[in-house]
Length: 171
Image: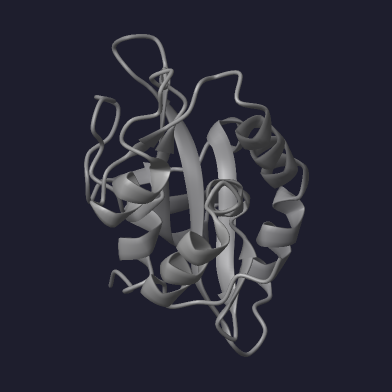
């Protein structure tokens, strides 16, 4: 069953496609309107977030294999090719491990990629992972791309954003 956490996650789903130079409308406006937020493929903050997620994926795997009390809403963000040769990053939830492979369900409706559709069950290709997350007693673990986008908001915008999500982001 899809958790209510994935509405805010959908709001901050990203694609590393071309970002208009003027960034109009703003990230804040896009989040409020449930739009996909696009970043240039050379966006330093987003690339750092993706690298951090990839380098710490073992933390996610350990938590998934041996969850402690209060661990929930495990999800992976995977990068899928689009027709214009860019990438669209999609959250995959309901993660399971069976027969030496991870599977999950596509939790975001893709905008550009034709590789997956909302509700598809997919085999997880670790090479495609661009982020991971789970909640630890309501506190976000991982979610590096979410944090990177949140960091671009002003103080009041962060406060407003934090009120719309069902978890706590500790800086």
